[in-house]
Amino acid sequence: MAALDYEIIETIGVISESPKGWKKELNLVSWNGRDPKYDIRDWAPDHEKMGKGITLTKEEAENLKKALENLD
Image (cartoon, rainbow, N blue to C red):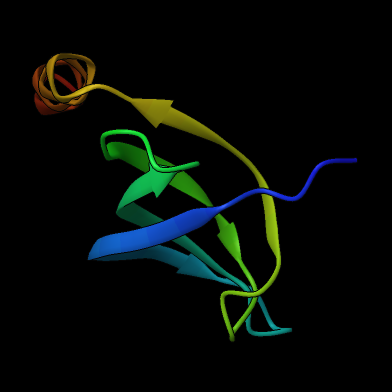
């Protein structure tokens, strides 16, 4: 498996934390030197390991924000 090159540009917020210290975070991440995208995934405490996640463009993140504002 090829190594992933990533840089967390900005930590926006922590969504949840597991008893083992892993945190589900919303970050702005650059993957393999590409333009940064909004990223939601679980991270180990040292950010050396990560779980599966989802990346969003700015437009997709804005659409998600609008959809979440409609939650009751």
